Amino acid sequence: MRPGLAPACGLLLSACALLVSACAPPDADRGFTPGGGVEPAAATASGPPGRQPGTETVTAAPGLTIEIEWPDEPDPERSAVIKAFAGDFTAQWRAVGTSGGDRSYVKGIDAESSAYMDAVTWVHGFLKDDQSARGVAKLYALRVPAVVGRGAEADGCVDLTGVRLTDREGTPLARQPAWLKRPRAVFLQTAGLGRGDDGVWRIRLYHHADYPDERAKECVR
Image 1 (cartoon, rainbow, N blue to C red):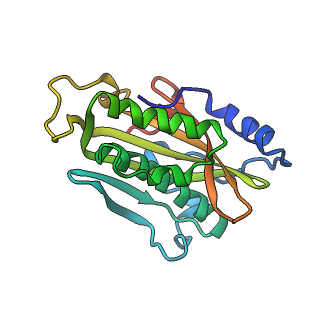
Image 2 (image 1 turned 180 degrees about the vertical axis):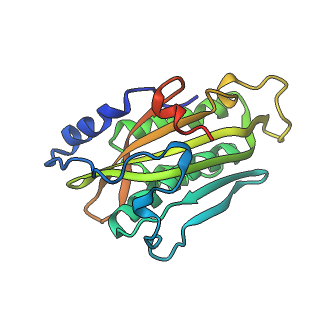
Image 3 (image 1 turned 30 degrees about the vertical axis):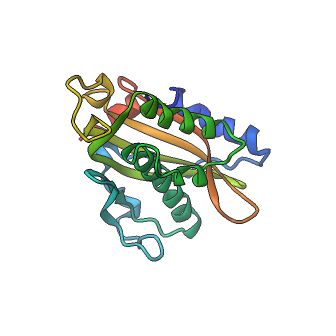
């Protein structure tokens, strides 16, 4: 029920090839922090412009909320990438929670990219089975490890243990899928984004690091 698994280390190379951009190496001081803790180098930095670091609860649909832990990120470009990444995550769950009534998620994805079909297929997987969702999905340890010209990579830990699949009326299904239970419900989500001529960052590639991958284990709290 998630876009296909691929090694996270291959995402940057894929993004470079896709965007035909000169690649800059990932920042050495932006390493992944186990459990979503605050990185020492960022502890005294100010948050994204117009948004304070901390936890924000967003209502995606009736009974379905997204908890986003916004990091300390002083760089405006990376702040915009993080916002686009989190916005896409929220919008896809909004589509699921509204039984396809809200299709705003397609605005945050490059329509000519592989990510577009991945997202549409994922959302329609719920719709064809007359399923929706309720509960709390968590997104944390957000970071941008690299910017590659007009492309960037964004990472975030996801915890879906608080989500339950329901029918369209909101009644929880008697049998919940394994991907909503530990250890599979906690994983690292990675995306490649491209900045369009309009200056907007949009998703172009999806990858996941699932348990027992070491990067997924680092998301466990």
